[in-house]
Image (cartoon, rainbow, N blue to C red):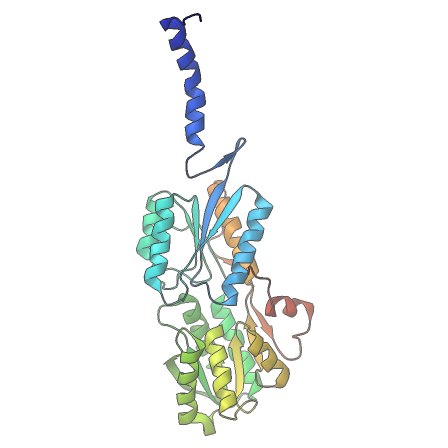
Amino acid sequence: MKRMSLSAFCRLTLGLLPLLAFSAGCTSEKRTSGNTSVRKIAVIPKGTSHEFWKSVNFGAQKAAQEIGDVEIIWKGPVVESDTGSQIEVVKDMITRGVDGIVLAPNQKGGLVDAVEESVGEGIPVVIFDSGLDEGPKISGYVATDNFKGGQMAADALAKAIGESGNVVLLRYLAGSESTEQRENGFLEAIAMYPEINVISSDQYGGENSTQAKEKVDQLLQLHGDALEGIFAVCEPNANGTLEAIKNAGLAGKVKFIAFDPSDALIEGMRNGSVHGIVLQDPVEMGYQGVKTMIAALNGNATEEFQSTGEYLATPENMDEETYQRLLKPQIVD
């Protein structure tokens, strides 16, 4: 066998160095496919148990498929009150070196530091569904106009009770920006009806329907005979409220406006125990959240706030195509 000279060996080794470097690059966090890098986008919801978030996931996956070379990492706490777990998810995504984070903060102040850390590490953040306190420079905010949604609920409830009587606002959780906006919008709009009296607006239904039912049970015991209407600001609150109204024998008598749909609430509109549901478009929210992130990564201008729409379903319009799509949005199982 002919021996290779030292000079020839050195030339061969130098020639292989670019190939070795390319091979090592293929094992990094950002995978490559041909000449195109696959962008890894973390989509972090408030929680993962409610149907709403499964529809957000569907929209995010739809956007990724349309754009191409985008991988969605879907991860969040199980329950929406677990701010600590959501912070840990954000920090984990920073450690993993994702390209961007699309986040629905379950506490407007509690996620500020985590978002600040992400932006500081060069990982942009788009906020969706629920706002964040001022501080970090985010790349966009995609959400329902929740204040307007609360106003729509107030007008619907006023109409249902004939613009006169006592009503209750059931709040959700302190620090949830989206539901606080709904609450504020409701109270501002209902004040325009001089013969309507808000007899309770400081009670919180909590994170699940069981807690909400217990709270509404108490409110009905205090005010049931003099109560004409209730507004519940989110799906778990609304499900618990409906159960409490039915158990008290007040279904149909106490007019009820919900925010976000469920099978029970949809059936309630058919049988007369629910008088309207304010609807969001969670599929569009997930879709536009990812689209906004990719635009930011590409260096394109993004809107400071992008509304995904607000709608009011009623027993009269609920079978129309637009409302059927929003009452039963597509989900990722």
